[in-house]
Image (cartoon, rainbow over all chains, first blue to last red; front, top):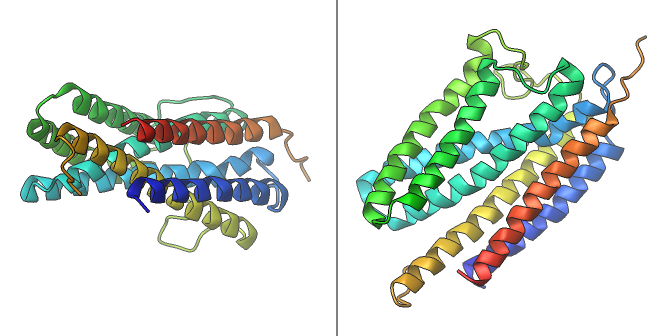
Length: 226
Length: 36
């Protein structure tokens, strides 16, 4: 089975399991008393946010290693991770305001967490634009690697921004030094969702990596680059 | 005890938006993969 087919099957499994997460979250997970059903946006918003940040960290790490090793596989992986990270960032930046409106009374506020997440999205878009704009493959990979490292440096700031500044965005209730502050039934649904988003990340990145490989193979006259 | 807020529409909207974004991207990758 080719890499593209493996990616497709993993993605398809992730999408089917995402349906399972929807059913569990909507029908079998209790409604939070103060926020109401809108709180259930948590089960998709937070896993998508975690993978938005993790994807950029992986782009940055791949970039650092690429600058030393000049291995094209690292550049291909970084490109794939950045594109999938952009998709997850889009989910975060659309589900966040939809959750914020009924709870905060506003779609958007320029607080540190929201603004830095928007900045990360722009970094992702900038990264993809740079890749599209530079023709020379070696130069493109180097520019992209540097931009990826810059994006990676932003991620800890995004996570810690709710501790460093007064923000409307709440502090973490799971990714914090003490135990998660939510009941087991909600935590289990969230963990299931995180697992499914992880599967989707792996499937989508595998497909995108295979696509880059196929394009490079075609450009090099059919020589296998894997 | 305060009543639970009736804001299920926002929840449905967020879930639909997420599914649409993921499906559109998955289809885009599938199509690009068939014609690289």
